[in-house]
Image (cartoon, rainbow, N blue to C red; front, side, top):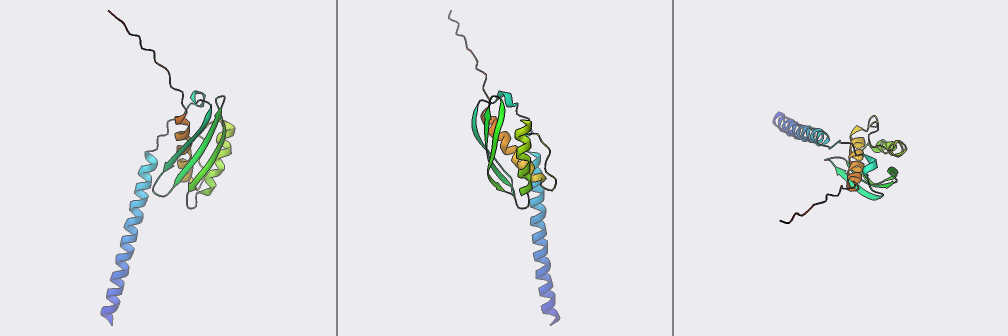
Length: 142
């Protein structure tokens, strides 16, 4: 009888250790992914008028947005997809981004990861609309 309990305890301990290791790896992966987000601000005045789609994904959180820009201002941000677990409140920062015409608003407390992922998706969309400076090449003939 004692041998069966030892085996059961050993199996349970093994399961706990495996689950713990997976959780630690997931947390470390998320920290690295958040650190790797390109947080370089986008100058809205350099974004051409239009509608742009952007997205950003981490291990646990994903966001896809559409951003409309007109006359150098963010007119609208629509969240198409936000897989976030408990991070739904992060969506509340969207009106701040639009009213301030700036992606760099404060993250929502208790939804920091989702906040950063949504901001990264909005930056991704805006970067797609940045006007490129034209370069004029002159050909000199000898």
